Amino acid sequence: MQTDAKNPDESMRERPMCGMPILWGMRETSGTEWENGKIYKADDGDIYDADLTLQPDDTLKVRGYRGITLFGKTQIWNRVSAENYPACTK
Image (cartoon, rainbow, N blue to C red; front, side, top):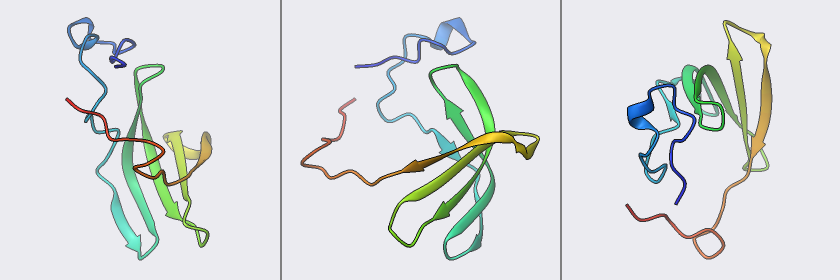
């Protein structure tokens, strides 16, 4: 099980990643778009602003940024199935 090893708070570095929220605070702006939320990037221990868009092909476009969206990065996330990616256990 992975731990939150890059968390800036040393006391949190041993906590398991399983079940830890990584997206929060989104405000729905349409049936397929959310903005003004936060995303936790565990591989560097930082929190970024984030916007989400559900794409027509059922993928999720995730934009993480600092301050304004110009200073960010977009990723496309794919749904996973329980058969291919079993849920973690706490």
